Structures are given as C-alpha cells and as structure tokens.
Image 1 (cartoon, rainbow, N blue to C red):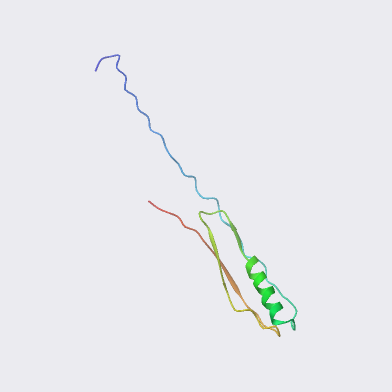
Image 2: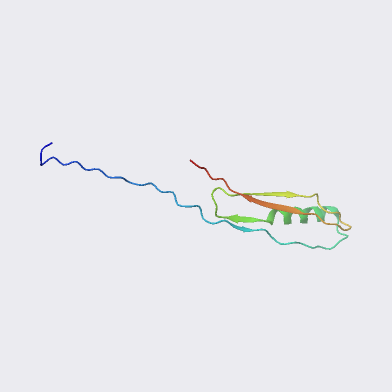
Length: 91
C-alpha cells in the first residue's frame, strides 16, 4: 500500500425507539333505573360496554372486552372485563 492510499470505513446504527408507555383507562361503573323495557336495558348495556376501556401507547396494543349477558330489566348486575395486551417481537 502506498503512503497516499487512504482506506476509510464507518459504522451507522439503526435504532427503534421504545414503544410509548401504555395509558389504559378502564371506564366507570353504571347504575340505571329498574322497570325499563328489556330492550332499553339491553341497548344501554351495549352502549356502556362499548365505551368502557381506552388504550393509547404501547406497541400494537389491543383492547378486548369480555362481558356477561345484559342484566334483567327488573334488577340485576352484569360485569365487563376490559383487558389490554401488546405484542413485542424479540430477536
């Protein structure tokens, strides 16, 4: 190799930043009057279930809801379980 020959090299890095922190809001309980029609209770319950649980952040975060059947119009309770999950690839 001659003195005026120059060899150079460099290394560049590709970085994927960490996923944003998950923010999960479960929702609120709901109480409504009895003796409405069952259709009204069913509609109110379905609307309440659909608004329970919000998630932002994470990496491909998913929100699922598992719910009981709608409560009886003459009185009763039903529960919804809201779950958040994320995926992360390793390698």
